[in-house]
Length: 131
Length: 359
Image (cartoon, rainbow over all chains, first blue to last red; front, side, top):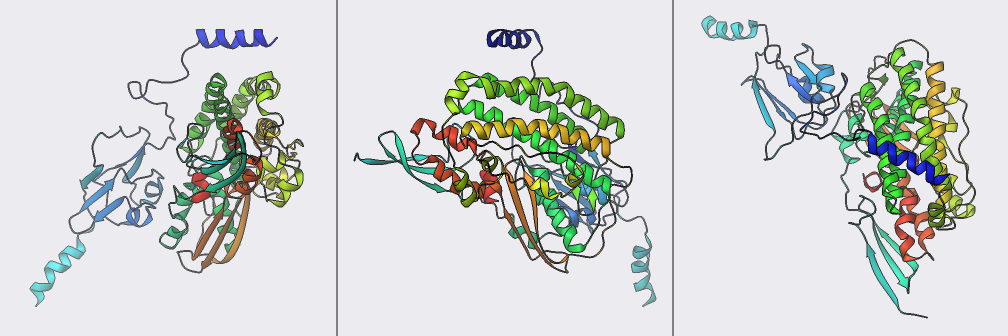
Protein backbone atom coordinates (compact mmCIF):
# COMPACT_ATOMS: atom_id res chain seq x y z
CA UNK A 1 0.00 0.00 0.00
CA UNK A 2 2.62 2.51 1.09
CA UNK A 3 4.84 1.36 -1.74
CA UNK A 4 2.23 2.13 -4.38
CA UNK A 5 1.42 5.47 -2.82
CA UNK A 6 5.06 6.39 -3.00
CA UNK A 7 5.27 5.25 -6.62
CA UNK A 8 2.35 7.49 -7.44
CA UNK A 9 4.09 10.51 -5.90
CA UNK A 10 7.38 9.64 -7.58
CA UNK A 11 5.79 9.29 -11.02
CA UNK A 12 3.84 12.50 -10.53
CA UNK A 13 6.99 14.40 -9.59
CA UNK A 14 8.90 12.84 -12.46
CA UNK A 15 6.49 13.83 -15.19
CA UNK A 16 5.17 17.15 -13.94
CA UNK A 17 6.76 20.53 -14.42
CA UNK A 18 8.96 21.85 -11.62
CA UNK A 19 7.05 23.57 -8.81
CA UNK A 20 9.67 26.30 -8.69
CA UNK A 21 10.37 29.19 -11.06
CA UNK A 22 13.77 30.20 -12.39
CA UNK A 23 13.49 33.64 -10.83
CA UNK A 24 14.86 36.20 -11.82
CA UNK A 25 15.45 34.77 -15.31
CA UNK A 26 11.72 34.14 -15.53
CA UNK A 27 9.49 36.81 -13.99
CA UNK A 28 7.96 36.08 -10.58
CA UNK A 29 4.32 35.12 -10.26
CA UNK A 30 2.29 38.17 -9.57
CA UNK A 31 -1.32 39.19 -9.31
CA UNK A 32 -3.10 42.47 -9.80
CA UNK A 33 -3.05 43.07 -6.09
CA UNK A 34 0.65 42.32 -5.60
CA UNK A 35 2.53 45.08 -3.87
CA UNK A 36 5.77 45.32 -5.84
CA UNK A 37 7.19 48.81 -5.45
CA UNK A 38 6.01 52.41 -5.19
CA UNK A 39 5.97 54.56 -8.31
CA UNK A 40 5.42 58.29 -8.56
CA UNK A 41 3.94 60.45 -11.27
CA UNK A 42 6.02 63.62 -10.70
CA UNK A 43 3.59 65.85 -12.57
CA UNK A 44 0.81 65.22 -10.04
CA UNK A 45 2.76 65.55 -6.77
CA UNK A 46 1.93 68.70 -4.81
CA UNK A 47 4.60 68.17 -2.09
CA UNK A 48 2.00 67.96 0.66
CA UNK A 49 4.26 65.59 2.65
CA UNK A 50 1.41 63.35 3.81
CA UNK A 51 3.28 60.30 2.49
CA UNK A 52 6.37 61.35 4.43
CA UNK A 53 4.41 61.66 7.67
CA UNK A 54 2.49 58.43 7.18
CA UNK A 55 5.44 56.22 6.16
CA UNK A 56 6.11 53.74 9.00
CA UNK A 57 9.78 53.36 8.05
CA UNK A 58 10.55 56.98 7.11
CA UNK A 59 11.60 55.91 3.63
CA UNK A 60 10.11 58.95 1.91
CA UNK A 61 11.65 62.40 2.10
CA UNK A 62 9.91 65.35 0.48
CA UNK A 63 11.68 68.67 0.06
CA UNK A 64 9.12 71.42 -0.39
CA UNK A 65 11.63 74.14 -1.28
CA UNK A 66 13.61 72.10 -3.77
CA UNK A 67 10.44 70.36 -5.00
CA UNK A 68 11.94 66.91 -4.84
CA UNK A 69 10.41 63.62 -3.74
CA UNK A 70 12.89 61.03 -2.59
CA UNK A 71 12.34 57.39 -1.66
CA UNK A 72 14.83 54.98 -0.14
CA UNK A 73 13.80 51.71 -1.75
CA UNK A 74 15.83 49.73 0.76
CA UNK A 75 13.89 51.24 3.68
CA UNK A 76 10.51 50.96 1.99
CA UNK A 77 8.47 48.01 3.30
CA UNK A 78 5.86 48.29 0.53
CA UNK A 79 2.92 48.72 2.90
CA UNK A 80 1.19 51.04 0.42
CA UNK A 81 -0.04 53.50 3.07
CA UNK A 82 1.45 56.34 0.98
CA UNK A 83 -0.50 55.15 -2.05
CA UNK A 84 -3.71 55.04 -0.01
CA UNK A 85 -3.31 58.50 1.50
CA UNK A 86 -1.94 60.43 -1.49
CA UNK A 87 -4.52 63.19 -2.13
CA UNK A 88 -3.70 63.61 -5.84
CA UNK A 89 -3.13 59.91 -6.59
CA UNK A 90 0.37 60.67 -7.83
CA UNK A 91 1.67 57.56 -6.08
CA UNK A 92 0.81 54.14 -7.45
CA UNK A 93 1.76 50.59 -6.57
CA UNK A 94 3.49 48.65 -9.31
CA UNK A 95 3.01 44.88 -9.14
CA UNK A 96 6.56 44.14 -10.30
CA UNK A 97 9.15 43.49 -7.62
CA UNK A 98 12.12 45.79 -7.71
CA UNK A 99 15.19 43.94 -9.08
CA UNK A 100 17.75 42.80 -6.52
CA UNK A 101 20.53 45.23 -5.81
CA UNK A 102 24.21 44.46 -6.24
CA UNK A 103 25.56 47.67 -4.71
CA UNK A 104 24.65 50.02 -1.89
CA UNK A 105 22.06 52.65 -2.61
CA UNK A 106 18.38 52.45 -3.35
CA UNK A 107 17.76 56.19 -3.19
CA UNK A 108 15.53 57.45 -5.97
CA UNK A 109 15.01 61.18 -6.32
CA UNK A 110 12.38 62.86 -8.48
CA UNK A 111 11.83 66.51 -9.22
CA UNK A 112 8.11 67.08 -8.88
CA UNK A 113 5.65 69.67 -10.07
CA UNK A 114 4.88 71.06 -6.61
CA UNK A 115 1.66 72.78 -5.52
CA UNK A 116 -0.67 73.75 -8.32
CA UNK A 117 -1.75 77.12 -6.92
CA UNK A 118 0.83 79.79 -7.59
CA UNK A 119 -0.92 82.37 -5.39
CA UNK A 120 1.44 82.19 -2.40
CA UNK A 121 4.36 82.79 -4.75
CA UNK A 122 2.55 85.71 -6.31
CA UNK A 123 1.80 87.14 -2.87
CA UNK A 124 5.45 86.86 -1.91
CA UNK A 125 6.43 88.66 -5.09
CA UNK A 126 3.81 91.28 -4.48
CA UNK A 127 4.89 92.04 -0.90
CA UNK A 128 8.18 93.83 -1.64
CA UNK A 129 6.46 95.84 -4.32
CA UNK A 130 3.97 97.18 -1.72
CA UNK A 131 6.73 98.26 0.58
CA UNK B 1 27.86 9.36 38.15
CA UNK B 2 29.61 10.27 34.94
CA UNK B 3 31.20 13.58 34.12
CA UNK B 4 28.95 16.41 32.96
CA UNK B 5 29.75 18.35 29.82
CA UNK B 6 28.03 21.37 28.30
CA UNK B 7 27.27 21.56 24.61
CA UNK B 8 26.15 24.83 23.03
CA UNK B 9 23.20 24.39 20.66
CA UNK B 10 22.77 27.39 18.38
CA UNK B 11 22.26 30.27 17.73
CA UNK B 12 23.37 29.02 14.31
CA UNK B 13 22.28 25.44 13.76
CA UNK B 14 21.10 23.39 10.83
CA UNK B 15 17.63 22.42 12.04
CA UNK B 16 15.81 25.69 12.19
CA UNK B 17 16.60 29.16 10.93
CA UNK B 18 15.96 30.74 14.29
CA UNK B 19 18.65 32.07 16.61
CA UNK B 20 17.71 30.06 19.67
CA UNK B 21 20.63 29.28 21.90
CA UNK B 22 20.54 26.38 24.36
CA UNK B 23 23.31 25.25 26.64
CA UNK B 24 22.78 21.50 26.93
CA UNK B 25 24.28 19.91 30.03
CA UNK B 26 24.96 16.29 29.15
CA UNK B 27 25.75 13.18 31.07
CA UNK B 28 26.94 10.71 28.47
CA UNK B 29 24.25 11.06 25.80
CA UNK B 30 21.46 12.18 28.14
CA UNK B 31 20.47 15.81 28.56
CA UNK B 32 20.24 16.59 32.27
CA UNK B 33 19.79 20.33 32.17
CA UNK B 34 19.11 23.06 29.65
CA UNK B 35 19.86 26.76 29.89
CA UNK B 36 18.04 28.73 27.18
CA UNK B 37 19.30 32.12 26.01
CA UNK B 38 17.47 34.52 23.76
CA UNK B 39 18.38 38.03 22.69
CA UNK B 40 20.11 37.61 19.36
CA UNK B 41 17.51 39.33 17.21
CA UNK B 42 16.01 41.94 19.51
CA UNK B 43 14.74 44.84 17.41
CA UNK B 44 13.02 47.11 19.94
CA UNK B 45 9.72 47.19 18.06
CA UNK B 46 7.70 47.87 21.22
CA UNK B 47 9.56 51.12 21.84
CA UNK B 48 8.74 52.32 18.33
CA UNK B 49 5.12 52.73 19.37
CA UNK B 50 6.06 56.06 20.95
CA UNK B 51 7.43 57.35 17.66
CA UNK B 52 4.73 56.31 15.19
CA UNK B 53 1.08 57.19 14.94
CA UNK B 54 -1.18 54.44 16.22
CA UNK B 55 -2.64 53.90 12.76
CA UNK B 56 0.76 53.41 11.13
CA UNK B 57 2.02 51.14 13.88
CA UNK B 58 -0.15 48.32 12.47
CA UNK B 59 2.52 47.73 9.84
CA UNK B 60 5.21 47.50 12.50
CA UNK B 61 3.06 45.21 14.66
CA UNK B 62 2.71 42.92 11.64
CA UNK B 63 6.46 42.72 11.27
CA UNK B 64 6.93 41.28 14.77
CA UNK B 65 6.73 37.87 13.14
CA UNK B 66 7.25 36.81 9.57
CA UNK B 67 4.81 33.90 9.70
CA UNK B 68 1.86 34.93 11.87
CA UNK B 69 2.11 38.53 10.65
CA UNK B 70 -1.59 38.93 9.90
CA UNK B 71 -2.68 37.79 13.35
CA UNK B 72 -0.24 40.16 15.07
CA UNK B 73 -1.67 43.06 13.11
CA UNK B 74 -5.20 41.88 13.78
CA UNK B 75 -4.67 41.55 17.53
CA UNK B 76 -3.16 45.01 17.69
CA UNK B 77 -6.05 46.65 15.84
CA UNK B 78 -8.56 44.68 17.92
CA UNK B 79 -6.99 46.20 21.02
CA UNK B 80 -7.16 49.72 19.58
CA UNK B 81 -10.76 49.18 18.49
CA UNK B 82 -11.71 47.98 21.97
CA UNK B 83 -10.15 51.07 23.60
CA UNK B 84 -11.90 53.40 21.18
CA UNK B 85 -15.16 51.47 21.40
CA UNK B 86 -15.41 50.87 17.65
CA UNK B 87 -17.87 48.34 16.29
CA UNK B 88 -16.32 47.37 12.98
CA UNK B 89 -18.42 46.11 10.04
CA UNK B 90 -19.28 42.43 10.11
CA UNK B 91 -17.84 41.76 6.68
CA UNK B 92 -14.46 43.01 7.90
CA UNK B 93 -14.68 40.60 10.86
CA UNK B 94 -15.29 37.67 8.51
CA UNK B 95 -12.49 38.72 6.16
CA UNK B 96 -10.09 38.92 9.10
CA UNK B 97 -11.13 35.42 10.14
CA UNK B 98 -10.55 34.07 6.62
CA UNK B 99 -7.10 35.59 6.40
CA UNK B 100 -6.24 34.38 9.92
CA UNK B 101 -7.10 30.83 8.93
CA UNK B 102 -5.09 31.16 5.75
CA UNK B 103 -2.14 32.27 7.89
CA UNK B 104 -2.65 29.26 10.12
CA UNK B 105 -2.68 26.92 7.12
CA UNK B 106 0.50 28.39 5.72
CA UNK B 107 2.22 28.39 9.09
CA UNK B 108 1.30 24.77 9.79
CA UNK B 109 2.42 23.65 6.35
CA UNK B 110 5.70 25.48 6.82
CA UNK B 111 6.14 23.84 10.21
CA UNK B 112 5.28 20.35 8.92
CA UNK B 113 7.92 20.81 6.22
CA UNK B 114 10.56 22.00 8.64
CA UNK B 115 9.68 19.25 11.08
CA UNK B 116 10.12 16.62 8.37
CA UNK B 117 13.40 18.25 7.42
CA UNK B 118 14.60 18.05 11.04
CA UNK B 119 13.97 14.29 10.91
CA UNK B 120 15.80 14.03 7.60
CA UNK B 121 12.65 13.43 5.56
CA UNK B 122 13.38 15.92 2.81
CA UNK B 123 10.87 14.87 0.18
CA UNK B 124 7.98 15.54 2.58
CA UNK B 125 9.57 18.89 3.32
CA UNK B 126 9.47 19.77 -0.39
CA UNK B 127 5.92 18.47 -0.77
CA UNK B 128 4.49 20.45 2.13
CA UNK B 129 6.16 23.60 0.90
CA UNK B 130 4.75 22.99 -2.56
CA UNK B 131 1.26 22.85 -1.04
CA UNK B 132 2.00 25.94 1.00
CA UNK B 133 2.68 27.81 -2.22
CA UNK B 134 -0.99 27.37 -3.17
CA UNK B 135 -2.02 29.07 0.09
CA UNK B 136 0.51 31.88 -0.44
CA UNK B 137 -0.77 32.47 -3.97
CA UNK B 138 -4.29 32.95 -2.65
CA UNK B 139 -3.01 35.29 0.05
CA UNK B 140 -1.11 37.32 -2.51
CA UNK B 141 -4.07 37.56 -4.85
CA UNK B 142 -6.38 38.80 -2.10
CA UNK B 143 -4.12 40.91 0.08
CA UNK B 144 -1.17 41.89 -2.09
CA UNK B 145 1.49 40.28 0.06
CA UNK B 146 2.67 36.71 0.36
CA UNK B 147 3.66 36.60 4.01
CA UNK B 148 3.30 40.20 5.18
CA UNK B 149 -0.30 40.81 4.23
CA UNK B 150 -0.77 44.36 5.50
CA UNK B 151 -4.55 44.29 5.19
CA UNK B 152 -5.61 45.15 8.73
CA UNK B 153 -6.25 48.71 9.69
CA UNK B 154 -7.92 50.37 12.62
CA UNK B 155 -11.60 50.28 11.77
CA UNK B 156 -11.69 47.36 9.37
CA UNK B 157 -9.63 45.91 6.55
CA UNK B 158 -7.98 47.57 3.57
CA UNK B 159 -9.15 45.20 0.87
CA UNK B 160 -12.30 43.32 0.04
CA UNK B 161 -12.55 39.87 -1.52
CA UNK B 162 -14.98 39.61 -4.41
CA UNK B 163 -17.61 36.84 -3.99
CA UNK B 164 -16.35 35.01 -7.11
CA UNK B 165 -12.81 35.04 -5.76
CA UNK B 166 -14.08 33.70 -2.44
CA UNK B 167 -15.78 30.77 -4.19
CA UNK B 168 -12.62 30.16 -6.18
CA UNK B 169 -10.56 30.13 -2.98
CA UNK B 170 -12.83 27.60 -1.31
CA UNK B 171 -12.77 25.44 -4.45
CA UNK B 172 -8.98 25.66 -4.53
CA UNK B 173 -8.77 24.56 -0.90
CA UNK B 174 -11.11 21.66 -1.59
CA UNK B 175 -8.88 20.79 -4.54
CA UNK B 176 -5.75 20.49 -2.43
CA UNK B 177 -7.53 18.85 0.51
CA UNK B 178 -6.80 15.32 -0.72
CA UNK B 179 -3.14 16.24 -1.13
CA UNK B 180 -3.14 17.60 2.41
CA UNK B 181 -4.75 14.36 3.51
CA UNK B 182 -1.99 12.37 1.85
CA UNK B 183 0.61 14.56 3.56
CA UNK B 184 -1.11 14.14 6.92
CA UNK B 185 -1.20 10.38 6.40
CA UNK B 186 2.55 10.37 6.05
CA UNK B 187 2.97 12.22 9.33
CA UNK B 188 0.41 10.18 11.24
CA UNK B 189 0.89 6.67 9.86
CA UNK B 190 4.40 6.35 8.46
CA UNK B 191 6.24 3.83 10.60
CA UNK B 192 9.63 5.56 10.47
CA UNK B 193 8.10 8.88 11.51
CA UNK B 194 6.20 7.21 14.35
CA UNK B 195 9.41 5.59 15.46
CA UNK B 196 11.09 8.98 15.53
CA UNK B 197 8.28 10.83 17.34
CA UNK B 198 6.29 8.53 19.63
CA UNK B 199 7.19 8.72 23.29
CA UNK B 200 9.81 11.42 22.64
CA UNK B 201 9.68 14.65 24.61
CA UNK B 202 6.63 13.93 26.74
CA UNK B 203 4.99 16.93 28.39
CA UNK B 204 2.46 15.84 30.99
CA UNK B 205 -0.93 17.46 31.26
CA UNK B 206 -0.04 19.08 34.61
CA UNK B 207 3.27 20.40 33.33
CA UNK B 208 1.62 21.85 30.25
CA UNK B 209 -0.92 23.63 32.45
CA UNK B 210 1.36 24.89 35.21
CA UNK B 211 4.26 25.91 32.98
CA UNK B 212 1.89 27.96 30.87
CA UNK B 213 2.16 26.10 27.58
CA UNK B 214 -0.04 27.56 24.84
CA UNK B 215 -1.30 26.53 21.44
CA UNK B 216 -0.57 23.12 19.93
CA UNK B 217 2.03 22.46 22.66
CA UNK B 218 -0.73 22.64 25.28
CA UNK B 219 -3.36 20.94 23.13
CA UNK B 220 -0.97 18.09 22.40
CA UNK B 221 -0.88 17.42 26.15
CA UNK B 222 -4.64 17.43 26.57
CA UNK B 223 -5.05 21.04 27.73
CA UNK B 224 -7.93 22.23 25.58
CA UNK B 225 -7.07 25.91 25.39
CA UNK B 226 -8.00 27.53 22.11
CA UNK B 227 -8.46 31.29 22.14
CA UNK B 228 -10.63 31.10 19.04
CA UNK B 229 -13.36 29.75 21.27
CA UNK B 230 -13.61 33.16 22.98
CA UNK B 231 -15.24 34.31 19.74
CA UNK B 232 -13.13 37.28 18.68
CA UNK B 233 -13.47 38.45 15.06
CA UNK B 234 -16.10 36.16 13.50
CA UNK B 235 -15.15 32.99 15.38
CA UNK B 236 -18.19 33.36 17.62
CA UNK B 237 -20.46 32.61 14.66
CA UNK B 238 -18.50 29.63 13.39
CA UNK B 239 -18.85 26.04 14.55
CA UNK B 240 -15.58 24.33 15.22
CA UNK B 241 -13.91 22.20 17.82
CA UNK B 242 -10.31 22.62 18.92
CA UNK B 243 -8.12 19.64 18.12
CA UNK B 244 -6.84 18.00 21.30
CA UNK B 245 -4.44 15.09 21.67
CA UNK B 246 -3.59 13.47 24.98
CA UNK B 247 -0.18 11.80 24.66
CA UNK B 248 1.92 14.94 25.07
CA UNK B 249 4.79 13.65 22.95
CA UNK B 250 6.21 15.01 19.68
CA UNK B 251 3.78 12.82 17.73
CA UNK B 252 0.77 14.35 19.52
CA UNK B 253 1.95 17.90 18.85
CA UNK B 254 2.52 16.99 15.21
CA UNK B 255 -0.94 15.42 14.99
CA UNK B 256 -2.59 18.51 16.48
CA UNK B 257 -1.07 20.72 13.82
CA UNK B 258 -1.79 18.31 10.98
CA UNK B 259 -5.44 18.00 12.00
CA UNK B 260 -5.84 21.73 12.61
CA UNK B 261 -5.26 22.34 8.92
CA UNK B 262 -8.57 20.66 8.16
CA UNK B 263 -10.31 22.66 10.88
CA UNK B 264 -8.96 25.79 9.21
CA UNK B 265 -10.28 24.73 5.80
CA UNK B 266 -13.65 24.04 7.41
CA UNK B 267 -13.69 27.48 9.09
CA UNK B 268 -12.83 29.22 5.80
CA UNK B 269 -15.63 27.32 4.08
CA UNK B 270 -18.15 28.31 6.76
CA UNK B 271 -17.00 31.94 6.59
CA UNK B 272 -17.40 31.98 2.81
CA UNK B 273 -20.98 30.77 3.25
CA UNK B 274 -21.95 33.11 6.07
CA UNK B 275 -20.12 36.28 5.04
CA UNK B 276 -22.58 39.21 4.79
CA UNK B 277 -22.42 42.04 2.28
CA UNK B 278 -21.56 45.51 3.36
CA UNK B 279 -18.70 47.89 3.92
CA UNK B 280 -15.29 46.61 4.98
CA UNK B 281 -14.06 49.63 6.89
CA UNK B 282 -15.28 52.63 8.81
CA UNK B 283 -14.01 56.12 9.41
CA UNK B 284 -11.95 56.47 12.55
CA UNK B 285 -11.43 59.77 14.29
CA UNK B 286 -9.72 60.64 17.52
CA UNK B 287 -7.08 58.66 19.33
CA UNK B 288 -7.19 55.81 21.85
CA UNK B 289 -7.36 56.82 25.49
CA UNK B 290 -7.12 53.88 27.87
CA UNK B 291 -5.61 50.46 28.02
CA UNK B 292 -6.54 47.02 26.77
CA UNK B 293 -5.20 43.50 26.74
CA UNK B 294 -6.01 41.99 23.36
CA UNK B 295 -5.70 38.22 22.93
CA UNK B 296 -5.84 36.01 19.88
CA UNK B 297 -4.93 32.51 18.80
CA UNK B 298 -1.92 32.31 16.56
CA UNK B 299 -0.71 29.15 14.81
CA UNK B 300 1.77 28.82 17.68
CA UNK B 301 -0.63 29.64 20.48
CA UNK B 302 -2.05 32.53 22.39
CA UNK B 303 -0.66 36.01 21.76
CA UNK B 304 -1.31 38.96 24.05
CA UNK B 305 -0.97 42.59 23.00
CA UNK B 306 -1.09 45.09 25.84
CA UNK B 307 -1.88 48.55 24.53
CA UNK B 308 -2.03 51.80 26.46
CA UNK B 309 -2.85 55.19 25.00
CA UNK B 310 -3.30 58.65 26.50
CA UNK B 311 -5.55 60.28 23.93
CA UNK B 312 -2.70 61.37 21.68
CA UNK B 313 -1.70 60.07 18.26
CA UNK B 314 1.20 58.11 19.70
CA UNK B 315 0.56 55.30 22.14
CA UNK B 316 2.29 55.19 25.50
CA UNK B 317 2.99 51.51 25.84
CA UNK B 318 2.74 48.40 23.76
CA UNK B 319 3.76 45.05 25.11
CA UNK B 320 3.53 41.74 23.28
CA UNK B 321 3.66 38.33 24.86
CA UNK B 322 4.23 35.89 22.06
CA UNK B 323 3.45 32.15 22.20
CA UNK B 324 7.07 31.06 21.76
CA UNK B 325 8.12 33.07 24.79
CA UNK B 326 5.61 31.19 26.96
CA UNK B 327 6.55 27.87 25.42
CA UNK B 328 10.21 28.10 26.43
CA UNK B 329 9.70 26.88 30.06
CA UNK B 330 7.82 23.78 28.80
CA UNK B 331 10.62 23.27 26.26
CA UNK B 332 13.20 23.17 29.06
CA UNK B 333 11.12 20.52 30.85
CA UNK B 334 10.71 18.55 27.62
CA UNK B 335 14.42 18.45 26.95
CA UNK B 336 15.46 17.20 30.39
CA UNK B 337 16.12 13.50 30.18
CA UNK B 338 16.07 13.16 26.41
CA UNK B 339 18.86 11.93 24.16
CA UNK B 340 21.13 14.42 22.43
CA UNK B 341 20.04 13.13 19.02
CA UNK B 342 16.38 13.94 19.82
CA UNK B 343 17.06 17.58 20.76
CA UNK B 344 16.43 19.06 17.26
CA UNK B 345 13.11 17.26 16.87
CA UNK B 346 11.92 18.25 20.34
CA UNK B 347 12.98 21.88 19.91
CA UNK B 348 11.12 22.05 16.62
CA UNK B 349 8.03 20.34 18.02
CA UNK B 350 7.06 23.51 19.96
CA UNK B 351 7.37 25.50 16.71
CA UNK B 352 9.78 28.10 18.04
CA UNK B 353 9.69 31.55 16.47
CA UNK B 354 12.48 33.47 18.12
CA UNK B 355 11.96 36.55 15.97
CA UNK B 356 8.52 36.76 17.61
CA UNK B 357 9.74 36.04 21.11
CA UNK B 358 12.30 38.85 21.08
CA UNK B 359 10.45 41.48 19.04
